[in-house]
Length: 170
Image (cartoon, rainbow, N blue to C red; front, side, top):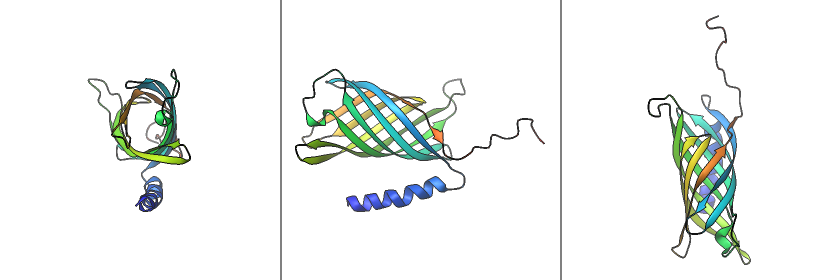
């Protein structure tokens, strides 16, 4: 099953990214927040994806580390891979401010003794350049590790964008 999912990701994502109307991007980011019942955390991520018809689609790799606590469990520090999607709204209240809201699904993993442990995760986010995020990681022991935080991102387009003529109609 894992091989089929990997095959699907690596055959579908490139086709979405290179579609003619899409704008591919790469987006590094950093996160700070609170691990419910535990500690402050820091994380980083890198996403590669595309915009399409008012939405975004990407694959994200990242990691999370506790800041002010001695590591008690192997899963206190982990890495993750997830597929994310979201939609863009240009009306936030009475203002014309872009607001991106969406979510992701994937897997988190950490080293436990001599093996790598995998567990599912889901993410929800909303914002624009600065996002409010909530992540839930579902451990094998019916334990849910929940992180709430803010994430700062810098999406960089991977192809030129035509903003039109600066002088109007020419």
